[in-house]
Amino acid sequence: MTDLPAASTSDAVPPTHGVSFSEAFRVWMKIALLSFGGPAGQIAVMHRILVDEKRWISDSRFLHALNYCMLLPGPEAQQLATYIGWLLHRTAGGVMAGGLFILPGVIAIMGLSYIYAGFGHVGIVAAIFFGLKAAVLAIVIQAVVRLGRRALRNGVMIGLAAIAFVAIFFFDAPFPMIIVSAGLIGYVGARAGRPEFAVVGHGAVPSGAVIDSLMSDEVPDHVRPNLSRALKVSAVWLLLWLTPVVALLVLYGEANVFSQIALFFSKMAMVTFGGAYAVLAYVAQQAVEHYHWLQPREMLDGLGMAETTPGPLIMVLQFVGFMAAFRDPGQLSPMLAGTLGGLLATWVTFAPCFLWIFLGAPFIESMRGNKVLAGALSAITAAVVGVILNLSIWFAIHTVFREAVPVRSFGLSFEMPVFSSVDPAALLLSLAAAVAIFRFRMGMLTVLAACCGAGVLLYLAGLI
Image (cartoon, rainbow, N blue to C red):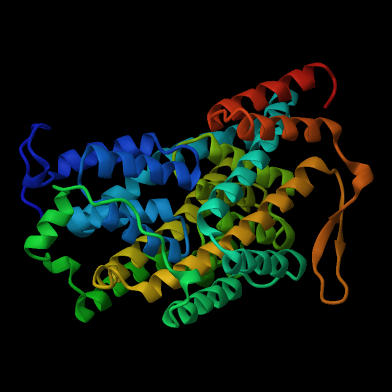
């Protein structure tokens, strides 16, 4: 049962008459198939379709929902889809919107994982991924620049980003500590009325937005904060999320690779704030340096897969889970183990995303216009710029240089590239990708395709 009046099957029905579940299904599937280009591109697609074209939600309510999703651990674009789906059609709408958003990526990444595991070391395939890595490095740097332009509006925000970068890159500071500290600074600053933490206003609200029009008449029951319902939501989604985790730990113990995947990605789902690139910074360090599931260059290959397929960039975690289980299959065949490992990583990564939305969204809806919350978000976003800068440098070290040495002294903890080990082909291709993106403003998919082609040409020429 939905909260909005049912529309007829005709798309010509005025939006103020509501949105049918079948129409919503078609629109969310369209969004999912168009969701290339990372969180910024995915959010832009949703904004264009839901705010400008369909007029389902106003710009102000869309941004309010986005602000909450940016505060959460996990992929903000998928959570935003879940949030808006929930506003339209309760829990069923949220599950549909959030589930469809990741479905194309699940299928695509699984197929690419099969190819990579079976043929990844074949010359042509390796050359394609060589090109992908160069393009991915340029794309991550572009993400730093884009987010920085929006978030670093003054000296205080620039300072927060710089401190976050130094803390995580040079001192290996825990990511959750950086986010919590930034949020507290933003909270205190906004509460004190400091202008540096004020949020810049956005455009006017379009009239006739479906959700906003109906909310102005009477707030639906599921949007009202309710403690009893919150407890039920928590019980159901915690059970769905943690049952496979507990079962694996009980049956196989902590040393089993499936138990490690379930436990690690469950922990990751609770502590990785700040969007996809911030998540990848944390996962790359843990999966590569702690668990040794894959090599740094393989992590970049996985990110290249996620960049070239629809859905959240965090779908790279499915690739990580696949490779971890593929290399430690136990009694299973490697491909079957990899399939189960990838799906397990996906489940424990995304199940909590639904919990955060269904549990917190009613309370967040009641806090629209809260300047203190917005101030905390502004500070967190600034810190995330520093975290993503850390990710881009980590990628650069493992893309352009063949060797890096750890530095562990005087409290420092970082990797220093061996400059004599620079890979000329990787350096030139990365610079070319950066010029294409920043100077000629070429699209992401164009740059990715060109770099893959360049990788193949370099291989055929015997240069890699």
